[in-house]
Amino acid sequence: MLLQRRAELLSALRHFFLQRAVLEVDVPLLGRSSVTDINIESLPVMTHKNSGYLQTSPEYYMKRLLAAGIGDIYCLGKAFRQGELGSRHNPEFTLLEWYRCGWDEYQLMDEMAELISQLYATRSSQSLVITKRSYADCFMATVGVDPHSAELEQLQQMAVAAASESWAGETRANCLDLLFSQLVEPQLPQGLLFIHQYPACQSALAQLGKNTQGQSISRRFEAFLNGMELANGYFELTDGDEQRQRFNNDLEQRESAGKTQTPIDHHLLAALDHGLPNCAGVAMGVDRLLMQLEGAESITEVMPFSWDRC
Image (cartoon, rainbow, N blue to C red; front, side, top):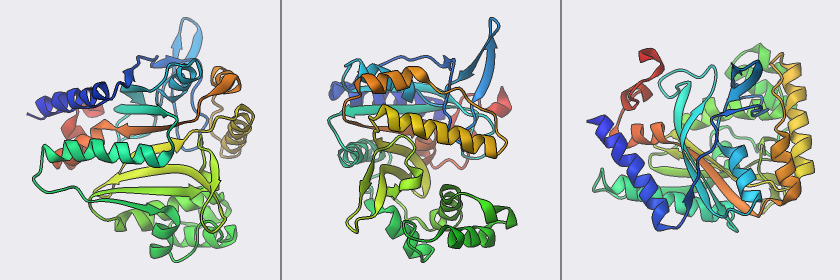
């Protein structure tokens, strides 16, 4: 039955974008480079004496298409991440990623809310509660400090208290990640929650901006459905030089942490230098979405072949 519901979900997702004239694109699963993010590990492979990586998302290829002028696009397919296995993780998973040219992150949140509401309505007669809150509001309500202005030493002390002494020398971004996952996420409300205006140190591939208090923030959001992280979206960075610097910073952090060095995707940087249109993009975990729609406790329940059955 769940396999049938999974097929119905994939069909519904494609129908949603077909109605909105968003083009489906097919991009490589295997590439010569991958993400440099210190918190994401790619799966390396060998092919005809060349090393490569199974892609953690279709993002970089899709941005190259955007820079070439393709317009609004989506990709529905497989992605891979090393070292991720549990009730919410599988090394291979299904990802839906889409980009809207000329939109900002708030317009994209609204479209995602419309999509999830439509899908939710097919499973429940009750309306889906949709909420938007800033990262600072969520963090301060639970942790009691402003994540944008708190001193690094204070965040490190709080991370040590929440985890272990090994966090005494961690970065600001990692401390905030730990505190948010350990203290804030368990308190998130039911329904669909969009958390936006993340700290500037967690900008990844998003543009920077200012909040109403004049503090520097990253123009990104995450979506949580019934407390489970479902999607990550950006008002996309278009500056090639800035992205190049962020990639180099990532590699420095990876070296300091003793992690493998992932080759920078110079094709992506060339695309950004050529000119990426102003756009917003979001990546959503389809397996996790199906878990929430069907009330499943583990990702293995909604996958035809999870890692333990491969």
